[in-house]
Length: 121
View 1: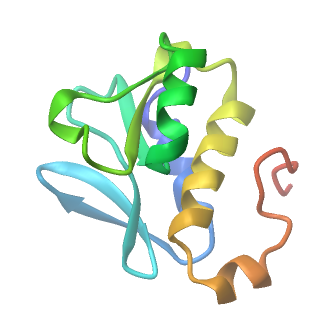
View 2: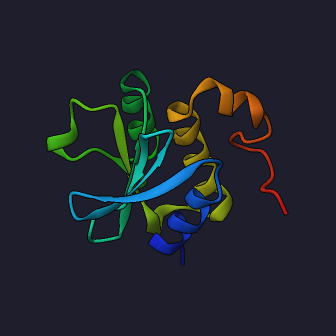
């Protein structure tokens, strides 16, 4: 089963990612911008998601994606760990969020770091 440690391990494998505790939970940042959080119950994680894409994503897979009421105005979406198909899907979701937060120099320096691309090694 996929868990919060898988989120941590994969997130920290991305260039210039650092882990920082905020709001009593682990957050992961690239170039100072947060791109994933793991709430304290560790059954889900939150990633960046453009608001104009979020409703469609949730409608397509409501068992996987959701937004708590207090985050409705944000550009984030929650992902239920138990609903993920495999580690490749987890990695794709994290990569997408990393790319939204990373500065252009990093995305240009790491063109292979994209959703759907094979993990190194």
